[in-house]
Length: 129
Image: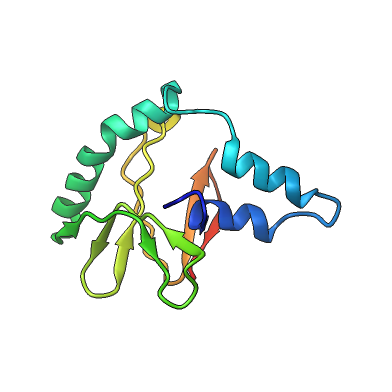
């Protein structure tokens, strides 16, 4: 399901490609890139995601409904896999960074943008479609 679609996690990479970047190489990396399923950082994130989601529910007094792959009805080649839906029009994407395991809970409530906080600075690489 996911392999034939442009997902939100790759959308930023596509939108910010330089003119000199070979499209074929980028597509090949997205489709057949290295298997990261046993990467320590990825395993840490997966192991802590449910706790982070529950903490968000408690701190925000909301219910997060888990979901899987969401395919755009008008453009079936576009998809996203948020970690859950919040209310009528919200969603949550949980990132549990091993490098930030001692940091405080970070709350970003910004319409139409998803911010990544890295090394104390804010940048964004994910887009709402």
